[in-house]
Image 1 (tube, rainbow, N blue to C red):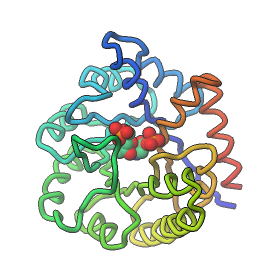
Image 2 (image 1 turned 30 degrees about the vertical axis):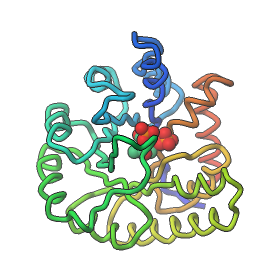
Image 3 (image 1 turned 180 degrees about the vertical axis):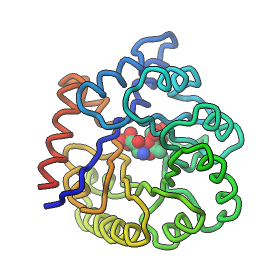
Image 4 (image 1 turned 120 degrees about the horizontal axis):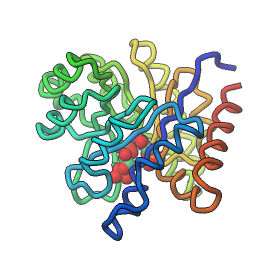
Length: 248
Ligand SMILES: CC(=O)[C@@H](O)[C@H](O)COP(=O)(O)O
Ligand SMILES: NCC(=O)COP(=O)(O)O
């Protein structure tokens, strides 16, 4: 039983993916964000990619205006994105690695090799009051580097665990989960706030939600997919229920 509350951040990127499949304005990610808030989301996550394949600049403008819960703004460590973040000053900025040719965010940020540049990159974001988070693999070297550059939060990439689970690679899934468990405890021991996300579903969320050090899960693709079948509000409520159950 953990008495630390576990927040649910709902990622609305893939509402924008569906909208962009046809151009135009439907379905509207802002409407999804407001619905997610009403359904119990503690925050909204949106990733403005360099290629704008889903979330657009106008979506970020709109989210900053309409949200009552905090926005977790995911972005690559580029000058363009830094300017946008400094203009909006969202509650949290999560620095993620990005490759144009990837289908989705494939791994964690390489912090150790770019420590100096990243320390300078995040300093102004912290100065304007953004909580800076680093999207990272379950690797002690990267976690130590994230701590050294002054990040307050790390978000552990759960994709490898979820992929192994989905493909029925039971031993691999168990090994990935164990790494996530150990690294949550390690990051927490350094004073970092620990978040996790990527690819989580009803089948994979509970073991991660049960780690006592994890304070926030960011979940998107599965929830938006599941909302086709049961509606966004029930899809989010069921995720919330599973998270609470795992925490007991
Ligand atoms: C950084 C990350 O985990 C991804 O959440 C992202 O927000 C989802 O979008 P992509 O599928 O484009 O990576
Ligand atoms: N940072 C992870 C996130 O926001 C959601 O990832 P996914 O559930 O869309 O894979």
